[in-house]
Image 1: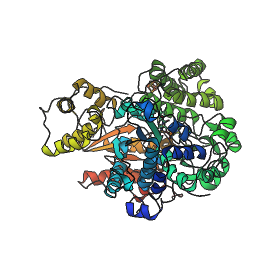
Image 2: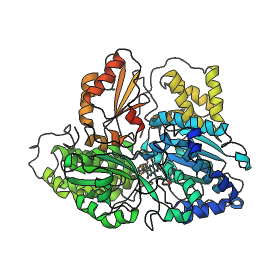
Image 3: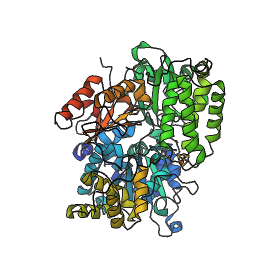
Image 4: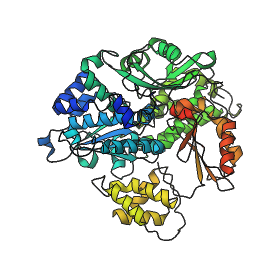
Length: 437
Length: 189
Ligand SMILES: Cc1cc2nc3c(=O)[nH]c(=O)nc-3n(C[C@H](O)[C@H](O)[C@H](O)COP(=O)(O)O)c2cc1C
Ligand code: SF4
Ligand code: FES
C-alpha cells in the first residue's frame, strides 16, 4: 500500500514513549529544521503540496505564508494551534495519531513553530479524549525533560512552549474561529472571516490552525523532501491520507493509503468489502458533513479531493468513510444525522439554529410516516436557504447531507410520503439497517 | 448549544485548597490572559467538587477576575460541564450514524432497560447517569459508550451487563478492552 508516513510507528510496542519514538527517528529532523531558515521550511511544505487534513484541504504551506512578517506584526506573537477536536461523525484518525505516536505530532509542531516564528502553541483536544490528554501531557513532559521543548531547544537558541487545552463537549469548537474563541475563554462560537486567523486569531495575534494529521506529516516531508512527498498520491493531492472506515464493512479501522487509490479497490481490498457479502448502497466519503455517494458513483471515484468532487459532487473532507449496505434505511440515516446538526448548532445564525431543528423535525415525520409530499419541498427549501447563508461552514455541513440524500435517494423519501397519512407503523426505534445488530 | 440547566441548589460558599491553588497557578502560566484559564479551572473545579453549582462558578469568577455571568455562560455552553449533580458513573452512549449502522439502537434500548433512567438520565440507585450523546470518535468500533473517562467499544448486551453488574457490585471501572488500543479490526464472530 505504499510507504507509511503517519502510521509507521503505530504497531511498535511502546510507540508513545520518548525512547521508542527516538529509536524510530522521531525528533531526528529537528537538527535539519534548525539548520534551515524558517522561510525555507515553509517553502518545502509549499512545494510538497501538503493540504490540510482537517476537512477543507487548504494548502498548508500557503496558509503558513499568510502570517504577516515580524515587521508587519508590530511586536505581536504568532500562535500555532493544533486542532485535535476530532468530532466530525465518522472520523477517528487523530485519536490514534495522538494515542499511538504523540511525539511525531510534537516534532511536527516544533518544526512548524520554527517556520512560523512561533513560541507558544496549544493542542486543543476534545473533552471526551481525556484519556488521550493524559498521554499527550506525559509526552509533552518527556519532551520538556529532554530539552526538546522549552528554552533553547537542542542548543538552537529557539524557545518553544507547548500546552494541551481540553475542550468540554461542543462539536463546533472544531471550526477554527470557534476553537480560538473557546481557547480565549469565551463560548465556542465561530466568528465571521475575514479577518482570517493567520492575520488576526487567538488574542488578536496571527494564528495558524492546523489539524493533527497535517502537522504529523511535516517531519517526513522535511526529511525526505517535497519531491518525495509529491511522488506519492496524485498531482493535486500529493502524499498519503488517513481514512477512518466505519459502518457496514468487514474491516473497519484507520488506514493510511496514498491519495488516488480507486475507491472500489479501497473498499474491497483494504477494508475487506461490505459486511456479510451484502450489496453496497451508499458511502459518505469525508465525514457526515459531505454529500452522500451512490454505489455507482463509488465505482467512478478514487480517493482524492478532485476525483470525489468531479465524479460524485462530494468532498474528501476529513476522510471519515461511512459504508452503508443495501439494507440501510436512507431516510432513517439522514434523520439520524440531522439530530446531530440540530443538537450541535451553536445558535448564532437564525437559518442554522432554526433550520437544523426544523429539518430534523420534518425528517422525523418523514421517517415515521406522517409527512406529506409538500414536506419534502419544505425540507429542500430549508437546506437551500441555510447553505452559504451563515457565519460558519456548519450551516452548509448540515444542508449538504439533506440536499444529497434527497436527490440521490429520492425514491426512498417519496415512498415514505406517498402513503395515506398515519398508515405506517412508527419506526422511530427500529434499526437503521439490518447489517449491524 | 446551551440547554439552559436550571440554577442548582447551593451547597454553600466554596474555597480552594492549597493544592488546588497551586494547580491554578500552573494553569494560569500557560495563557496570556486570565480568562483563557476558565475551561481548565472549571475542569479542576468539577473534578474536585463533583459538579458546578453557582457557588463553584462564583469562586471560579472571583479567582479569574471575570464576571460570574461569564463563567455561567461558558459553563452552560459546553455539555461536559455538569450544571446538575450526576451519578457516580456517567454513561455516554453514542447514537450517531456509524454506531447506529452497527446496532447502537439495541444497545441504547438495553441500557434503558437495565438502568431505568428518570427524565434526567439518573438510575434509581443514583449510581448511574445515562446520556445519549453524539459521535465520540469511536465510529469504527461501535456500538460504544464512554463511562466516565473510559471508552468501551464493540458493545453487546452481554458486555454491557458485565460492566453494569460489576459497577453495581462495587468493583472499579474495568480496563477497556484491548481493542481500544488497536486501529484496525478484522471480522469478529
Ligand atoms: C463545523 C466544522 C467543524 C470542524 N471540525 C474540525 C475538527 O474537528 N478537526 C479539524 O482538524 N478541523 C475541523 N474543522 C476545520 C477547521 O475549521 C480548520 O479548517 C482546520 O482545523 C484547519 O487545519 P488544516 O488546514 O490542517 O486542515 C471544522 C470545520 C467546521 C466548519
Ligand atoms: S452556521 Fe451554525 S454553527 Fe456556524 S456560527 Fe452559525 S449558528 Fe453557529
Ligand atoms: S458514530 Fe458513534 S463514535 Fe462516531
